Image 1 (cartoon, rainbow, N blue to C red):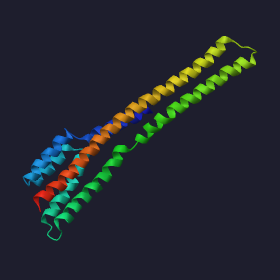
Image 2: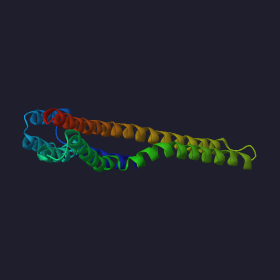
Image 3: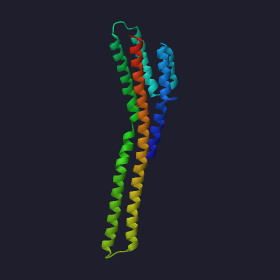
Image 4: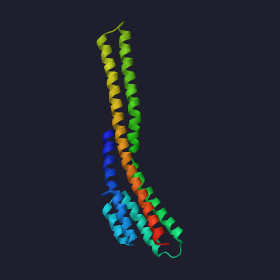
Length: 195
């Protein structure tokens, strides 16, 4: 289960990362916005094909609308762009975080299942020892061995799931940072160019 969920999340997150470096993408969009070339900025979003590009594209569309809107003040226009970016972000983030709860659950329950298996193995060992009046050392060793196998398997599974979970959340954090950077870029660009 750990590997199934991890592979599914890696594929989804790699697709969400898009093409190329997000920081370079944001710089290219900033360059196009500084030159007031919104069509080129939108084309960059289409080439990026990731979550940051999707959020940036939604913000750029609203950005373009706000340029020609003469009814709103600059602050209201910036707020409208910011709201559009937040709405697009709200659509992207759940897709990135879906199924991570299963990995975090495996991390927590893996050690508990290992402990349960250990206790069950020890109960079986001591039950055999008690019923045979001093017991057979080989049956005692089998029970203890079973307990230790359960411990090792549970702790190993939890450790692998924890490593994968942390790797995935780190990638999601980098995407989230790119989304935040893109929203900041849009609002700052608009505020400085269209006062």
